[in-house]
Image (cartoon, rainbow, N blue to C red; front, side, top):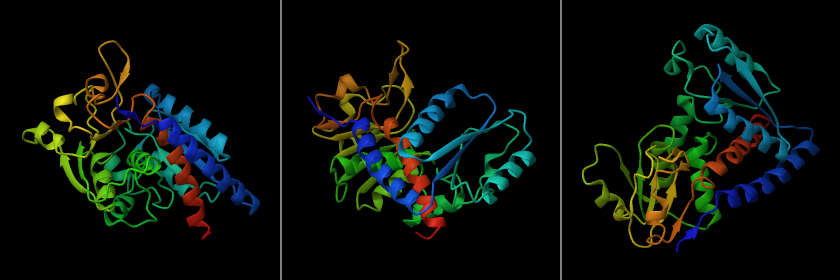
Length: 284
């Protein structure tokens, strides 16, 4: 049986260190502040927002939601973002995506202040992640993967790592972050020939495709570390990952569960980014 890499354990350890940081900041007269922006009624976002608000509250961060109507115009939406950019009491923003069709993400991503963009929406933060600049904000989910590796002392340096998925939300930024830690990274995707051959060679396999139970035991190497980023619903209506957990668990050395894995860490990473934003803005 493999070792289960508990995201909840990582999140709790990270939370404790952030509570101390916030306490020190408050002692200096600073309280980190987060604004979550949501457009329209997005039931799929409600659980994440609820979790983020709860985690921020536990850590001592002020967090609130700006709810905008689903039919808001692009111009009005940009105006709201500019208001938050200029609001010195707000240290960071999270814009819930996808946005409705009347708002072009390709346009509005240039409008958010990079210094307040906590989930790598701004192309400037994307560039900073690619360049390895520490003051940028990587997306919360890839950073959650890094936090899990760090917590369990899994050093990717020199190891063969396969990332299955090439989205700008997870796959590509995560590959760059692993490369900066001296991993030998292969990015796999829907056009990869003989996917199983690529993934079997990996000492660390990261699945981020959004396809329920796609990764079977014939796709993983003996004794590999498997990080499952996927959050899907299976045929029985239960949450599951991109990896068929029951099929691969006895073949691999370590594996993250779903639920209770990577997803459990993301809201704590968001809180970490709020604190980082405040410190950078105040030159602390």
